[in-house]
Amino acid sequence: MAQSSIEWTEMTWNPTTGCDKISAGCKFCYAEIMSKRLQAMGIEKYKDNFEVRTHEEALKTPYTWKKSKVVFVNSMSDLFHEDIPLDFIQKVFKVMNENPQHVFQVLTKRAERLFEIHKELKWSHNIWMGVSVENEKVKNRIDYLRKTNARVKFLSLEPLIGPLKKINLKNIDWVIVGGESGHKPRTMNPDWVINIHEQCIKNDVPFFFKQWGGKNKKATGRLLNGRTYDEMPEIELQHSV
Image (cartoon, rainbow, N blue to C red; front, side):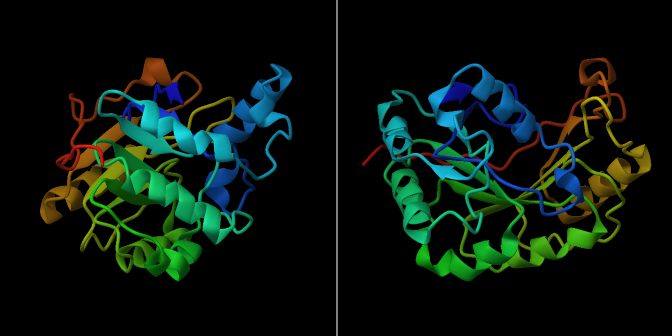
């Protein structure tokens, strides 16, 4: 568990760590870079660097949180990676099911596997399921997400490295857009962002603009049309079971 600087969540929880690259959006993976740093610091969880690993002890953590949280699950991994066994994914879902006082935001690039096993998972109201879509080439991830039983479905269009002119937003509850940051970030065209925002308005989908990115993301900020966009789906919480 760690407090998060990610604008659309409060904290992170990593019951699995590690991943590998599957599309263009992975090129400058922040989690891979961070994993190397944590390994160098001697953090036991990252002793194998960015190799895919499951962490049984981490499953206990959400039961210890006293106040309701908005939690990004697996900021350092992809829960639907093919090397993560179904039974462990089910354990993670059981934890989320048994802690309805928290919102758990799960994000994957492996939408095909998500769809393949979604019926074997219990989708309680507090699990928000999202897919990352960085350009037109991987837009089919949205179709896989739409077919799942997740109650809340969202898109993370980050790093946005190409236009997404005609997004099918049917049954999509939230859209996040962000540019790439780091030492060699790929440029995000403002017209791409404006177009996506217009699509969200047309379809009445909450729109969250995370950042312009660049080498100095603090300097470029997150203003669009002179304002910030922090729209989110309504959060429904229940008491713990």
